[in-house]
Amino acid sequence: MKTTFKALLAITIFILFTQTKTFAQGCVAIRSTGGVCTMDEHPDSSNKSAGYWLFNSNSRYYKSFRHFIGKQEQFQRFTLHNNVINKVYTQDLTLTRVLNNRWSVALDIPTADNSRSQVSSGTRFSTHSFGVGDIHLSGYVWLLNPAKAKNGNIQAGLGIKFPTGTYNYQDYFLNGATGARTLGPVDQSIQLGDGGTGITAEINAYYNFTHKFGVYGNFYYLASPKDVNGVLRSTTPASATTIAATGDVLSVPDQYLIRFGASLAVKKFDFSLGVRDDCLPVHDLVGGSDGFRRPGYIIAAEPGITYHVKGFSLYAYCPIAIIRDRTQSVPDIRTTQLTGTYTHGDAAFADYVVNVGVTFKF
Image (cartoon, rainbow, N blue to C red):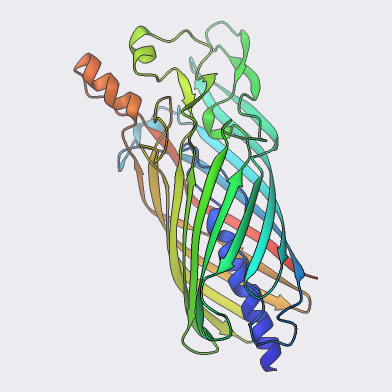
């Protein structure tokens, strides 16, 4: 019975850490970057030196439609029926090799099916994107000796995000006034990739007060040294001011996540409740911060439930937005300086995100 509990605990922590990078910002262009953190079985189990595999399939969906400038919602967009509506579905397939009770490596391949509905001269139309996103390869190590750290541990991860997703995906845009359709890059928020190679750093931790109750925390940062990817934001020629502010081309932004909460085991179920902060920052840690981006953050409450059956686990997590803030971008700041008129772009956010998935151990 004790061994079974340890195995269930391992899968539970694995699933909690898997959810670390399922970003949800709507028009704030934070996509799933792939990669999971893994939890070995309890270190004093009989097979602690033997390796094994974990396979995770995670499905994520959200609909962003509420526009914000800063923290102020733009209710007039509903009244005027010109709000943008993004529908994003992402399927992440992750294969993790647990090498021993301390080291593991993971490969994640995301596939996305996205749509964006917008209005031109009173006529609503949609653009779409579909395909493989940016693949992520990462390695992880438990920092504390598992033989001694019985109740909790800290895991560090380092990885690389490859620019495998199409970052200049094109579809036809409608001119509502003339009825003409023009082929051009879809909006940044539904592009499959960002066009840059990124470096990821992670810290994951947990502590179990009892066999049934514990706490967890995650920190994830994606650093993108590349400044811009060269894709024009619009098929319409940009103004001299927009070009001077570098708002005419798409940025390759950093992104980060802070997440913490508590988990309670009840028979075959694990219930968790946490808080998460998904953010696309205004300025990057490394490299320039030029180009068009919709920086911002969303603080959400994140309830979750996991059901364990022999050989695999089923789970569902649903972050619910509490605070949404579209911050002022670098081109916004530069445009304000060039024109003397305060400029602050908007972004559409979702009310909630649905994550459901299954994890197999073999």
